[in-house]
Length: 163
Image 1 (spheres, rainbow, N blue to C red):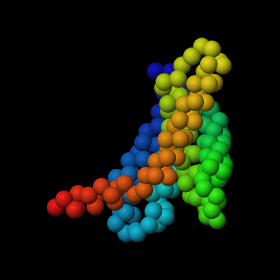
Image 2: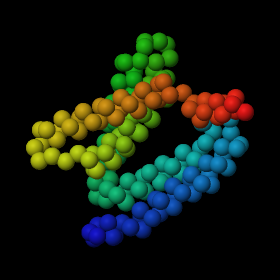
Image 3: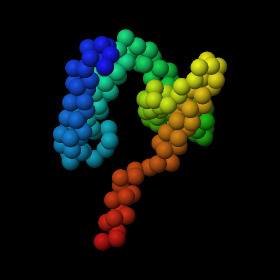
Image 4: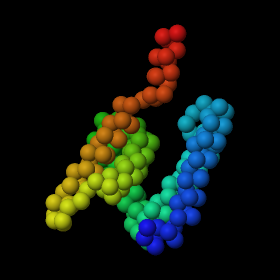
């Protein structure tokens, strides 16, 4: 294993521990006490801490570039949602509430996809592969945010109606 990963191994372990605590303890505790997704403050805080810790552990000295990419992805998605969503009085609110999270999620998925699957020697072909894959990932995530709805509620209602 390379020395950079060995030096950051405690940071990666800390990120996994924070993520596990967030998903296994904090989320179930808060879920039972809330009615709205905006009430899950500690869950979101701990998920963000886990994401930043894992990003730093995996990216090392390129952590600031990863954060810059996430911010640019959120901004691009916000602008796309603002101009592509039907023009209504609430379109700026929709762009903030759906565009920014879909941009961050698409950015994270793209960074994983780019690291694992996109390889090419030619820089121009690599750029277009990255551009197309990012736009596809952003499009899929945005469609899921727009048309997805509350899937957990729909699935639970379906199973409750079958009883």
